[in-house]
Length: 179
Image 1 (cartoon, rainbow, N blue to C red):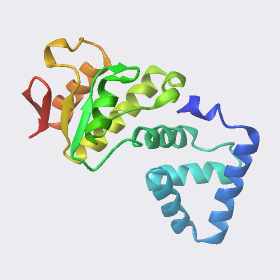
Image 2 (image 1 turned 180 degrees about the vertical axis):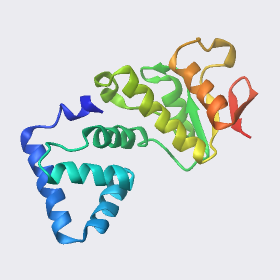
Image 3 (image 1 turned 180 degrees about the horizontal axis):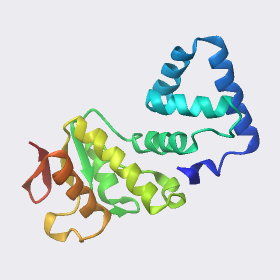
């Protein structure tokens, strides 16, 4: 999140500030917050904190909230309405991404932004994706069989999160379903 904002130039920050100020001036405050929250996938509370900080001249405002929304938007970029999500090991030109694309399934991919994120930011983006697809009740299809999942790696962490926090259960070696 913060890493993403190190990419903002001063000019981009000024444009952001002017855009928010213009929106707040054009519509009432409540309506502005609703628009900002809708367009950025922020909560109304985070949008309020962001606008409050920004308009009062505290730099870029609630940078954590805004940075989080940028990473979250990127995490949602490959969510489909297929009812299925593919998880697995990243293999350049193949792996879970190719399987997902071939089947029209949802998948998580932050592209080259991944390298710019801290481990905590990576997990938060990943978890946001898992929250979104589990809220839809997607069936989870793996590109790696259950017996070949390496403990402590992201796939293991994702599966444990889905099972322990989101109500998923193993159906077979390659499939989890929300019960």
